[in-house]
Length: 391
Ligand SMILES: Cc1ncc(COP(=O)(O)O)c(C=O)c1O
Image (cartoon, rainbow, N blue to C red; front, side, top):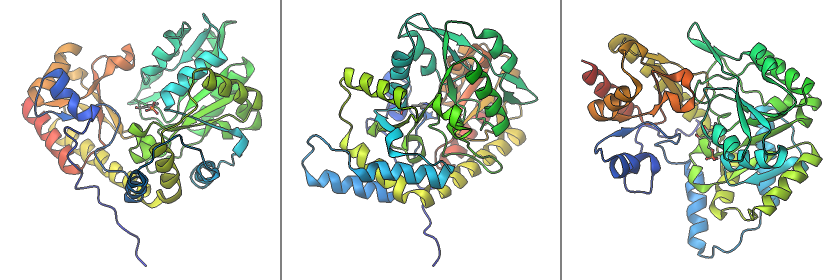
């Protein structure tokens, strides 16, 4: 029997559907007819199996307090085994209302006010606010950009750890630089964290979007010692476009740390998850593999399309193809525009909206982050707009 083919070309109209990505430009920035390529969600519907399950649950009509069934946890365990070769146990698992809330809870739970937390900038900017808003101090261990690719600076990391440094927040795969960290890189990083007694909080939300020639390795799988010092945060939300259902997964093999995490979850009153999020997670992890494989192929097609387009028709801008994630960096430094003018140029002249590089760290001055999780025709239209604006 031939494999079912899913359609990523048609996309869907997301305007006026409470979509942050689509409704923000017109309603907040006041610029109409913009193609939004910023916040990280996708212009594809979730897998039809998920949509159907959520529809069925909605039709039931009673939306009282949910109970998390055993099958929910089993779907996570089976997914991690099948996709990431990671054997996890039920008693390592907890949950949250998103990866960002979970990062905040980890900062609150595992560090004290005034403690230092390391982040590898440029990085997803809520890492900074999770530390600073909770009265802790951010220590930046900037990535190095060499020969068109990014790598960790472990010498700098070693030099920046002192008695007040408690935690490192890892982004793996990395948003926005698109690296899928190799085993040797993770091993060296983990070695330093173990030696210096740092807790690793590993945000692996982008783990499911990895391109040919690369493989995501959950850092906790490196060794039992690393697992005992790691909190892994993940979710099906990026993979299957479920962010609005606010359901995420927390994996903590160390029972002492897990109990502390759960206590803080209770202290914040976060005892109930969204009922549709529970349904969607389980169905996505149980029935979503084929859809996801085809999606990743489609996304890589978008990456290759954009790379060729920039090389051939907009050579003033360098497209940095990522190893994973549906986000990519545009190196616009050759245009010579100050950041504000660069942003205005894209929004008002080209009518495409990106996330500006510096929100992820000053290392990205002159860069923009583009989200390519859209039908190819939308991407083609956006690239055409940029090309015409440049000319
Ligand atoms: C690295 C990373 N972590 C977390 C999130 C958001 O997670 P959530 O919506 O589950 O809070 C994003 C979204 O872009 C992200 O890129």
